[in-house]
Length: 415
Image (cartoon, rainbow, N blue to C red; front, side, top):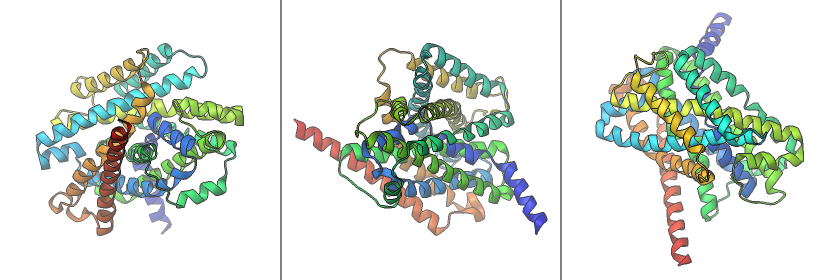
């Protein structure tokens, strides 16, 4: 028994990476801003969403990693083969546009976090873009993954900063399990944004591609599934502490909208220099981390969908479309941040809501694919998985329609 336990532990550490990294990078600059805005404006009320978000995240991530391990193909590759090139092309256009706003948001996080320490964005953003480009283009999958795993450890900054604020833990615990719904556009937008940033469409494409590139197969899948679940739970814990920190530091003092994630960091300053520094350091780490992953995910998605060579283990000359697309996304995302007067905060929140709007369509394709016996053999979804997944699709469509309806009603009323 001890020998078998050691074997499973060894396999777990050999497959660790894709699931944990994907879940953790979900707390990017846009996600941190969304969670900070939720805590600053609505206090502890939105915390209840984290439980269903965790379940949805686990189900979605598990389906992606399972499809990658069983089929040996990426998600966009499967969509192209099973639903045709036209459907894949339309899906990719929507994802590229959404992901580009996410990349911009993360370079904005780099700029704003270092501006807190009086470092100009005209220095920090180009240097961060160059560092990200060199890491991916010059590194191998193994070296890149080690850097990413190190970056995930730095998210502990948010846990410590949340504790230093000394929030109302009793109220946080109550609203973590007590659902609160309000027919207010701002509140509904935050709920959609929280789901959109927690279970983003790009994640499913990146995770499946990473599982394939790492060489994880159905034989290793039990350990890989544990890694996915652990990553999802840790991601939710980090999100919880971000909301709680801003609820305790900003909402309890004066509920308000925040301009960006650095505004949240400044809101923590009265509670101690360390709370402020840790929050700012966490934002910088998360921004650079996500600025690597999200354009990488987009490059994987497009190249798989159109049949081009892709992968970090390939050289530039072996996968030119993959690396040029990655390069263009980095250049565009960083370049926009250097334009004076760009409406950055509106774009960040908009990108998270767009993620929430696109998610149901991605989930529909995933559910249809994972339930095909010819494709998945004995690894199709259980009834429980299908119930949770279809319920998530219905809820996301309902929230999106509710937001659109309330917004239109308010516009007509204002006239």
